[in-house]
Amino acid sequence: MNDEKGQAKEPEIKSLDELKGKILSTRLADNMGTFDRILQVDKNFDLLKRFFYIGEKQACFYFIDGFHKDDTLQKLLQYFGGLKAEDTPQTFDDLLQKYLPYGELELVRDMEKLIGAILSGKPALIVDGFGVAVTIDFRNYPARSVTEPDKDKAMRGSKDGFVETLVYNTALIRRRIRTPQFTIEMLSVGKSSRTDIAVCYMEDRVDKKFLATVTQKIKDISIDALTMNQQSLAECLFSAKWIDPFPKFKYSERPDTAAACILEGSVVLLVDNSPSAMILPASVFDIVEEADDYYFPPITGTYLRLSRLIINILAIVLTPMFLLLTEYPEYVPKGFEFIAVKETMNIPLIWQFLILEFTIDGLRLASINTPNMLSTPLSVISGLVIGEFTVSSGWFNAEAMMYMAFVAIANYTQVNFELGYALKFMRLITLLLTAWFGIWGFAVGILFALCCLCFNKTIAGKSYIYPLVPFHFRELMRRIFRVSLPASEKRKGQQ
Image (tube, rainbow, N blue to C red; front, side, top):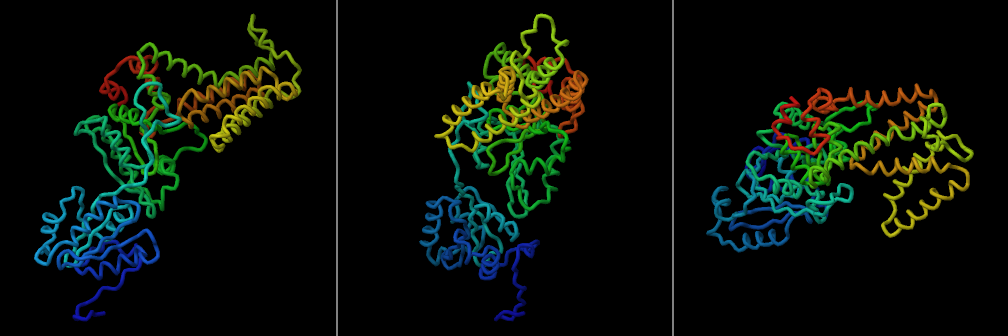
């Protein structure tokens, strides 16, 4: 086909797949026709274009309503509209130097890349006669205020937390690490979603081999969209065995925690639309650490760590051990006969524990979906019905209620949800094995939990229980007790 001037005219581009390898035309009308078809400007109410003149040059802005600062766009359009014929830019460099003093500019020739920039919220300026477009980044995403996360709280320290806007999250970390060695690489994943992923690390402290592996894995992800944000990314990065419930990543909604891990040589992944950071690699000792361990003096931090460690161990073994001692009274040590159940058991103890386990999960789910104004009445009703009436009705014994109450409280002593449910699964397996096989079942259940920990690997292929395996005494003391150890020594022990 030929146009009116007899020049060969390329076939119309009607889909996004046809844009691969295509560059902008010098004719504004051709570019506008292509972008109008691809972006479906006539159908999408929030995808807008503004046609105007820069002197005697025709120009067009493509942008998404609600993703930019209205006053900045208005000032630019007013400024361009006030230019006279003699102010017409002759070259694209002339346009940039004289009429676009804005700081965040990017020149784009690739049409597919330009479509991605527009859909991410960057207004794009296309001028007739120039085969290149410029994106002007004055985006203003809708975002909630930076407040302390509800789950990942600290008694001391900063009270800010990550939000769903990626640029805010990177700024919160950059505010804490003011060195040129701190690097943030931006990647994109998802054919439809084009989700932005920020890879944060210290250039002089990170394991370069591990960083290259993670970066390449992200680039190789072939998926339509990261529907569940970080969980979708985690499943693409690491194909875990379904039988292994222990988490491979540490999640944190605290910028100070993410910054501290970066300074120790870890890699932090920030996913757009997600208010938390993925920290990797992460061993079980990394996952159980909390900010309060470092915001208090060493003796207090050590006490908090040991308390959390002991409580988590008891959360696994307490109810299976009580079941074992109840079923086999001959195993009860002398002087501990008072732990025996005094009242008649109408329901076998194993069924009491299993019912209470599911009941506690039901209450947790109910609390999540209950409006805030009704959460207090729900707590009162739950406490009365489960705490008193179920015992008096004969369904449960007081001893079973007491031990399960301790287990329920123990689940909230550490932040990581995945680790809490991993401990819960180990406890349920040990309970069932103890009920079926007695002391041998109890031993096998504990051994199974230890094997799941000992034979586990981090995403970097290292031991999940380092510094126990391989054994590193000084690092182990640092993990258990609140003592100082330079980051270089920690990395040396992991290598």
